[in-house]
Amino acid sequence: MNICLIIPTLNCGGAERVCADLAIELLSNHHHIAIMTLKKESEDFFKVPFNISRIKLNLVNSSGVILPFLTLAKNRISVV
Image: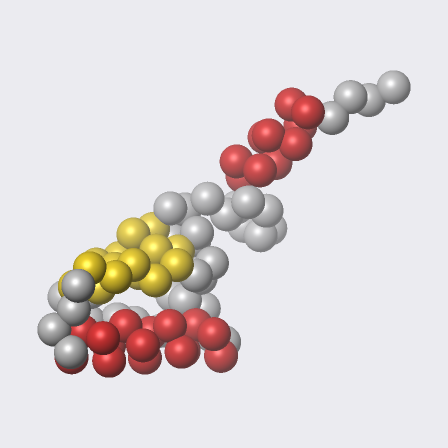
């Protein structure tokens, strides 16, 4: 089965650890696994095996703002 796990980051944290451990466990059960994050891989605390696909959307800037949503909000807000 093809499975994609989606999480904002793989930084140090409980949910991130569960995601990485779950991916490794599913891989050991012969599933094809991908982990998708909003931040780039260089910021990962938890490393995953090379045979787990990593999709890095890199949508979060250094201050933690999700860039597309900021652009969308800017276009929809009228300042009076």
